[in-house]
Every structure is written in structure tokens, then in C-alpha cells.
Length: 435
Image (cartoon, rainbow, N blue to C red; front, side, top):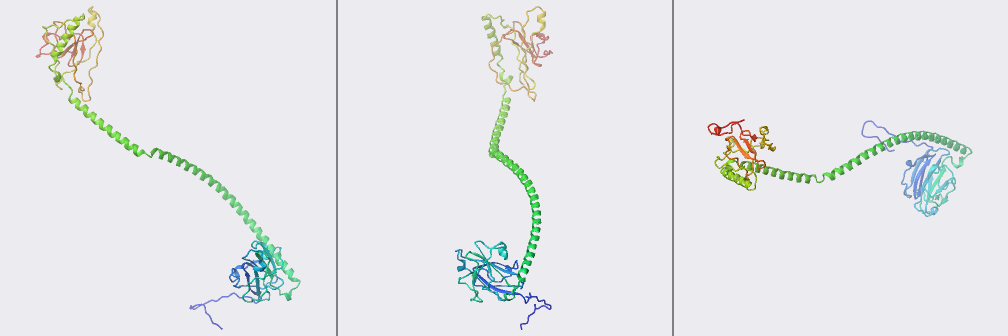
């Protein structure tokens, strides 16, 4: 006898499934394929050894010898020609004497795979199998009878493996029915349990559906926000796609304006440095006096009452030069006529328009004056009148013929002679200072 041990380790354990003496072993095959095997309504397909898809390879199973238990084997034919009794087959041989030639075999044929009660050996529709003329065989016994369910593609075969035919009694049916009732009872309990589980699952599904509905609403709200955001993004993209070009163009325009402004400022500065002063027009005073005389003579010729200037009177002195800028000041505004003339009974004088004095810059200097054009002829002073001290200048209003006296220092203008207007005050040693 062969001697064995576990491993090279000190201790070992051994195990083996002990097959009871009352067990039954069967060897079988099917042309073409075995699909499932049940025994006593239990699925034992995984306990079967052998290749289910090759009829040449035998399949072997061992089951306990349980009285009244059905062995159910289902399979199918590869050909679907309606001639399964010729092209398919089933053969089996068991240790208790049951073979495929046993008259107790029942079969069930179908055009679809075997399922439900027939798969377990239950339900109705069972009948006698047909004899198979297929060329297949069981390798361990080629002489065995070959059968099949019907001429349909799928077939199931059932037989009671115990008791043996020589020991059949009337108690067999009673035992089988009792076992069947117990199995049905178990099935009902199992169905009740499954119904309870199904109810719980329905409740869970209801809760999940509520959550799913809320999540769907939230997702829809989020999608609306995303859609609005995408639209806003597209609008801003359209607005700003050429923003860089617009900025560069505006920058260039700003640089041009800045350059023009700088050029204008330089021009203003240059113009101020080139503005004409009294020195520029010095030497033209005689020309002005000559024009005055010509204007007075022209008025007499036209019948306008304007006395000619006295030839013996000295010419009015030019305005004094400013001690600060070296330029002669511009005459100030003309004031209205004095009220003393009206009091003395003379004809009322016409109002004189007062011209504002020239504005000054932020530095206090008079802004640049453009080049002086040709001075038109004005009426000369009456004969015998003085032109005034250096602090005062005179001019004649061409519309009224009045003499206008203008202070060089204050720029004030009046039609009355200043109090110091007289030859006695007209000296450079003691100039007239009137306020």
C-alpha cells in the first residue's frame, strides 16, 4: 500500500471526503452539450467532472443514495434541424444498475433552453424519450442504448436513482410526495422572505427616487447658471476680442496728442519771448502824430467839427518805460464822462465804454501782444493843450471827440484833466504824481 505524509514539517493533517457506502456514481455524455444537472431538486452542476461541450469526454458524478430522488440532466444539440433524435443523443451508466436503457427515464423537449420546473425535474410535460441514431457513444461502454428527448433542439432527462427496480413498493410514491411537499413548503417560505426583501427594496428605491429628483432639480439649476455664464462669457469675448488693438491705437493717439501739446507749449514759450515791446515800436511816435493830424484835417474837410492840433504845442511824450520789463504799458480802459461837466451847464456827454485792463499771467506779467498794426488816424488835442506828464497819456475818442486821460501807473482812465495837469508839473525833476 502507498504511504504518504503532509510535508517535511514535523506535524501534518490529512483530510478526504468520505463517500458513504450508499452513494451512487454515474458516468454519462450527451451529443452535443450538457447544460445543467440537478439531484433531489438541488443544482449539482458544479460537482460534475468532465468537459460539458465535448461528447467524447465522459462526465462523472457521485450522489447519495436517497430513495425517491430524481436525477435530472439537461442539454442541447448543436444542429437545429428538427431531427434531434437522429443528430443528438444521451447515454448514461450508474453503479446501481441504472443505464440509459432503463424504462423509468422520462424526457422533456423544447425549442428554447430548459428552465423553470423542468430544469429541476418538476412541472408537467414529461414523456418517454426517443431512441437516438446519432453516431456518438459513451467511451466507457459503446454498447449502451442512446436516447434523446424529442426532435427539438433542447432536452431534459429525469429518473429516480433509488430504490432499485427489484425493491419498488407502494411507499415510493408516498415518500416522494412527502419530500415534494416539504420542498414546496420551503419554497413558499423562501418566496415570503423574498417578498419582504422586495418590499424593503421598493421603499429604498422610493427614497432614492426622491433624492434623484432633488439632485436632478439641483443639476438643472446649476446647468441654467452655467448656461448664463457661458452666454456672458461669449458676450465679453465678442467685446474684448480686439481690445489689445484698440488699446494700442488709443496709446498711439495719446502719444500724438502729447507731442502736439508739447509743440504748442514750445510755440507759446517762443512767442512770449518774441512779443513786441515799446522798444520794437520806438521811433514810430512821429508817424502816429502825423496820422493824427491827417485825420483831423480829413474831418474838417468832411465838415466834422474837430479842431486841428496846435502846431506850436509840444508833442505828447511817449509813455514811460516800465522799470521791470523795459516795455511801455498799454493804455487802460476809458472811464465814463465826469459829472462836473453836467453841473457846469455843458451838454451831457455820451457814456464811454470801459475796456477792462489786459489780463496778466500766473507769473504776474502781461501776456504776449501780437505785432502792432498800422495805427489809424485819431483826432489831435485842441490847440494850446498839453500832452501831459510822463505818468499820464492822452487819446481822443473818434466817436465823441473827447480827450481820454490814462494813468500809466494805475491804468485808470478819465475824461477830466488830472489836478496836476499843467506845465508847472511837467518836469522830469519833479514828475506829477496823481492818484
